[in-house]
Image 1 (cartoon, rainbow, N blue to C red):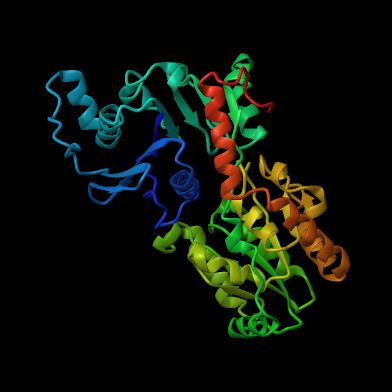
Image 2: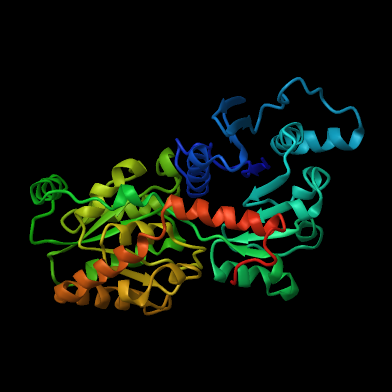
Length: 399
């Protein structure tokens, strides 16, 4: 049984995903699916406030403090000058490397790798057994790039962006599409429960509720979405905002504070709930009439789009990065993220309200597509990746 070590960046959250996080959720899916299938031995290394270890039947989860320099097991501090310097500068990375070595990892996958990776992991396994799993756009840089033999990308957009400087490396790139816990969102609540929940948030049954779910960050286009809703003269069109600027840790940034101030001045049109744990999100999706994802940057994927489609919501999204690969044209409206975004958002929202039959059909189409983005499919594709990586398949699946 091959041992595969997944190393999360030092700024990540723990695996399992008890504190949230998109990458962490993907890792937890693999952990849970592998507990049933047992095809691999997994090692998950992620940061937390103190060092600890959790064990499963086929996995181990190590939590390494970013600040605590104590090494795992009985390993002593390095005596050679170079290793000591690395430990001093990158304690988390050094400890993760020690764990991977002592667990005899056959393959190492760096989740959202940092530029310093060559300092700690380049000598742990041969280059052809070290992979970088991209989760956003990253710039190729010399020695950093050369440390990895394989690249894993969540979308064709990210893969193409990564390989544009070295197109010959496309044959070493594997497309592993992200997934979500579809079973959580493919639920339905009763009309009575829906009406009661809407009422508790200040919405009437005949209100048209637009859902935004995500971080309150400038690149997410939240201010533009608010402006578009407030520009619509139809007062029955309301906005439900869910999200914070730092997962479950609350709102801290100036941008988020300005958004909240705007909400306070427009409570008749906007309801802001802040951070909601993922386990409770599905019922809030169920009370909305549509979902808006007005990203102003290039999304690697946009998992909230999958959540919305699973929930049967029609979408209005921007033509952003890899998100458009996940959302078929039949599931919503796509607009440009340009100077006219506020007007185009408003027009799309109005169209959705005024065309209920078409809106419902979009929701049905999206729900059908989203059914293929389950944890089971994620694990299936990961197993296919490993067959290719180990040489049991002659080439990677087509990008």
